[in-house]
Image: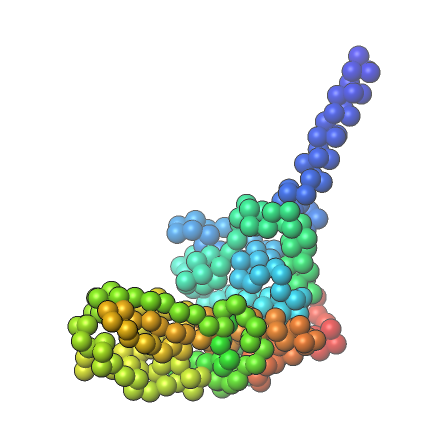
Length: 318
């Protein structure tokens, strides 16, 4: 009887070891937890979860930036994403949702990837990528950006196309640390340039306007970052950011060419262009820049600050 019990114990133990150690198993919370204050998150409409900020941030970072990027770029992105969350947490700011600080909708707050999604996307590189992302979060734990006495606004985008954009040209609020400036670091990005071809009928229906109006449309103004400020179509001015959404273009830095019954849009960059350029951050990291230098470049005048509730240390010495 004792011998049978012994063998049963061995079988159970080996089964447990397989679950824990197999490469595609999700990280164990007891081993991987980074902690931080509990934050309410709207995971889906009407579905609220509570999660430690730093552990939640791992899966935000994994969704927002490729794991193949250099560590310094991932660290800079971690600080920018954490700052966004902190801006909607007491005592720094108010919730973005009635019962949650932020949500997992990238169109409203920030992206978030489930463990199942990451396992499917990363495959055999899952364990390696998870540790790399986790280390970027851990290396910057609790660090957020302040401008003067307030939490900074820290927007980011995929690729600026050679010049970032001023916040005031994209949104209603102008900020001194979110101005347009040249960015030579994303020159090798696969998203540096893009194109989209539509029929004149498709493009006109999307506005809406007449096809003849497209033949005579002209740029009225450009933004400080070189994007379309306003475009005049059929006697009406449209914002470049609005037309980007209407025609589903990669960015508002576009020009066009009409041939026959089609219009080809040629664009630079991917995203709104304000704040941190993700491919630019990776280019800076590849050139040996630290995450602090990356943050200084894209959010000039801001300073690192340690969030309340974390162990206090001099961030300038890290």
